[in-house]
Length: 315
Image 1: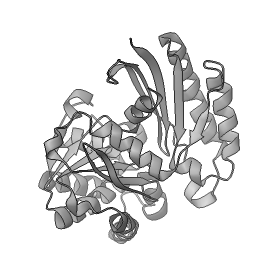
Image 2: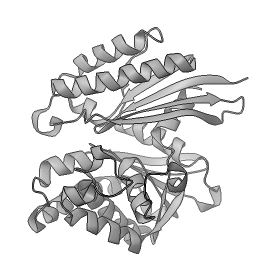
Image 3: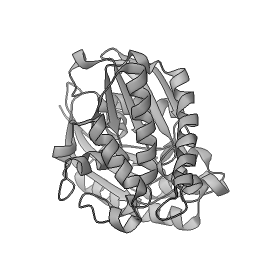
Image 4: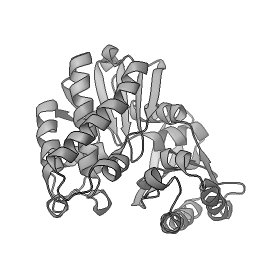
């Protein structure tokens, strides 16, 4: 007997939807995946609060998702909110909006804010399900807009996890105001990323990992550009592998490009153009550390991530 569920992940940069059928064996079959860039975390790092226009952009996207959930006949929905919502002083306004929109479809539904630790564990469960267990232990990195989760685990589950306050939106807003960024700004951003990721590496023994799995929009966009895809193709991105040499070449190009040139890449979502350089800086710091600490030399990119973990948690 299958059960149809809906998972919504609302991060700092984007809000995403997965509608899936859960089989008796617990396996997920996609019905629909959607993503909208709403930049909910606009200015939160500086002001500590959501901008009213950011909440409104998110509401418009969520209304659209609620219609899709109702049309698909999902009987359960779980919406989680992550880094930006943990930081925002006026998050009750956001929660009230989500309860109004989703509660009209599934009684009692609304967003819940989850800890960085739970975010890490949900990302891990979604990311490694299709990988050969012999490639473990895995270090899964969910590079978001406001935070990055680093998780070590294997087929038996998570061994260690840490969420640190560094992401593509946060590093861009804090360190990269110019277009293109200056060498000094890039250096400052690398130092910021190195400092914040050191916290994660102190808590998570990544030296035990054999395989690095990257999830979320920065990683999937880098994979699409590395393959020189004319437009974004999730099937070609999913479980693709990028050598560190190729990854460094793509990241360094994006970091130094003006936004107009980044926008010309076929797979580039318009909502990522201004923050992909910040994400690329965080990615290069991660690659350097995992090469040194674990001898890893390639990145595996997964389209399956926290959304899948959320759906599995409902099941």
